[in-house]
Length: 117
Figure 1 (spheres, rainbow, N blue to C red):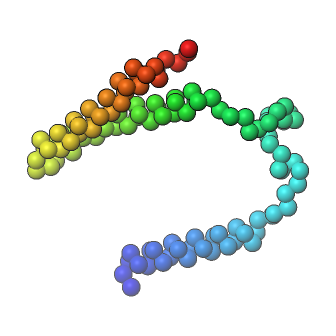
Figure 2: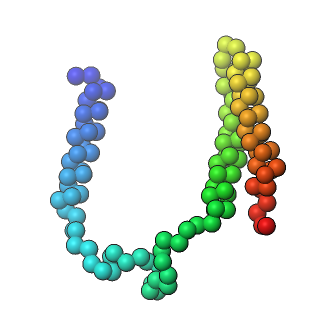
Figure 3: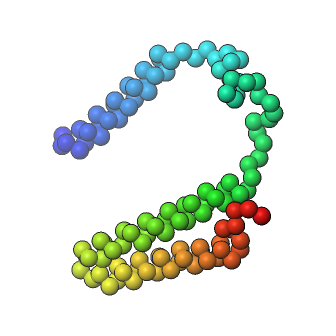
């Protein structure tokens, strides 16, 4: 048996043993205190299922857009120096950066970057 097969088998068996041990040892006796929502020690004042503002999701999506744009401008340059044809890599990286920049401009035009209305 080669080393990779041994490690995969060993990892699978260890995972199954630890999962079974968790179900066997864990105490499963929930009471009303464990099932209630925790709000800093106070009794809940309202429903915990209130909808979030759509601005929260917009900020999260914009963060992902900016983060992806920063990563896409940082990573292609070392790749371009190590490949046989760096102009092709640089062209693909430039296309990706252009698409992300167009998305940013679209968000800017639509008013997605205005934090307060």
